[in-house]
Image (cartoon, rainbow, N blue to C red; front, side, top):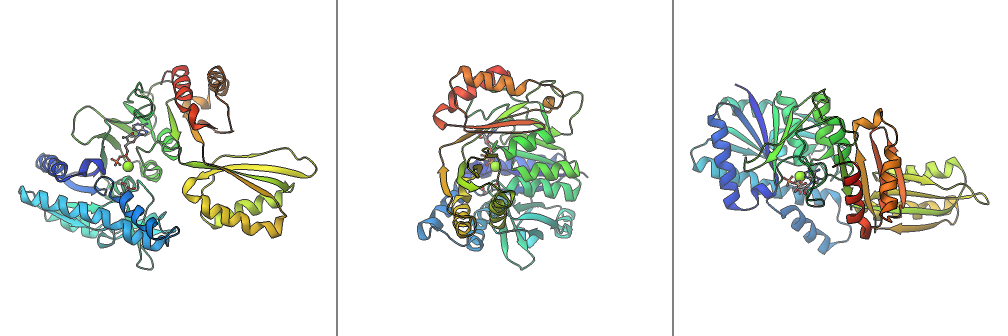
Length: 401
Ligand code: ADP
Ligand code: ASP
Ligand code: MG
């Protein structure tokens, strides 16, 4: 019998009524004849509420303690879902990440799954149980509870599917992957399928519908991923290897991200060493840098701008301040009012003129750019959040998104 891994997100298990509905769907799927592993997120806004309690007590809570705290959210939803399933006569058992052997490496609050010990899951499946597993959490080599970064339950599900040779169904509050987040641009189109590469770029550039690492794992292990509405209405979107059947458009989608901040280091001595020291100090603090730009030297001094997640701003500032005695009295400017817009598409590999079209559309809408970056299949720019709607509409119209 085939194994299917399903994942239900926070909204889909947001209250007891929804948990009952999810239980009914799981029972139906099980009875259709497959072995089922189900990953769930914390109910509704639970993780946000847990974090706000921690930040009420301290402006810099220890990441280890945040992991212990945040992992409790998923523990509630797995047990409730298992109770609801057993109540309707569908045998189920719930497990935390630690119990089921989801081994992680890396840092607290940003850990990565290194391995999964599938023996407990297989044993349970052989007993004909639905195996319910807490998303977003694991245990590291020091027996410490860890979490995978916000939205990480997708990664738990895809990693389990990779380990078990299963397909992965992601059930959420939207009926598939759209060209643009439909909450931001309601005219966006739903995609029938999208390639791993494009989804990976979209996810890491702010399309919060999937956790980026889940797509990385899906791509590596060729896990077929299907994203759909948890109620089962409407056909969803397949994330898979790119093939000839995919839409032949230059731009597949646009990601909009309001979670980044821009930092500018002003009057830095012009040397590769000073730049390397800056990025070393950010790396030591596990700060993820995205866009980078440098001005040409004037009187031996340069400005270097880069974008990082707002959550990492305090750590980045600590690192930069520590470098002042070594690199001289440079200034630091921070800008938390930025929106990052990125267009993504495999077609960019072969078609030229995409940047020209994007920047013409923005210029005709009087949108100023703060910083730009590109890769083989994406172009990103940071703009003022007040221009977001105008810019999104202009780009979506230009590329027919
Ligand atoms: P879950 O709790 O199920 O994991 P998320 O809130 O993490 O759900 O992800 C679903 C949300 O992702 C949608 O409600 C939607 O607003 C947002 N989203 C962002 N970009 C996209 C996109 N390109 N297509 C569909 N949804 C998107
Ligand atoms: N509960 C976690 C979060 O809110 C993980 C997830 O939802 O995927 O980030
Ligand atoms: Mg999510």
